[in-house]
Length: 90
Image 1 (spheres, rainbow, N blue to C red):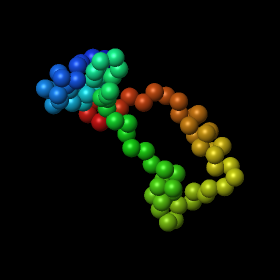
Image 2: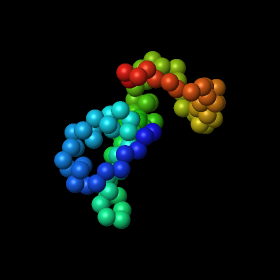
Image 3: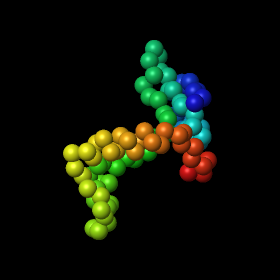
Image 4: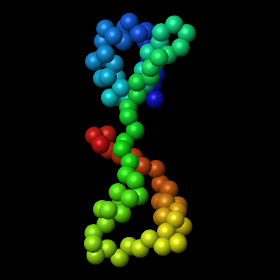
């Protein structure tokens, strides 16, 4: 990820331009004196809690949450360690 360092005054003058860079994946460090008061970067995607995932199961789902659930999830994750390369438009 590329990083741009910019003064606070310059950031105020062209905030829309900074957001355009952030949308492209650039990290913006806004500097003021000896420390950066802000860093702009794309937000992390929202994540579902386990409760939300369970709530999405259909009523007739054969899925069960038992004492082996955690090890089953770990086995599923380990079985799919390939890199994720989402399309550029995603």
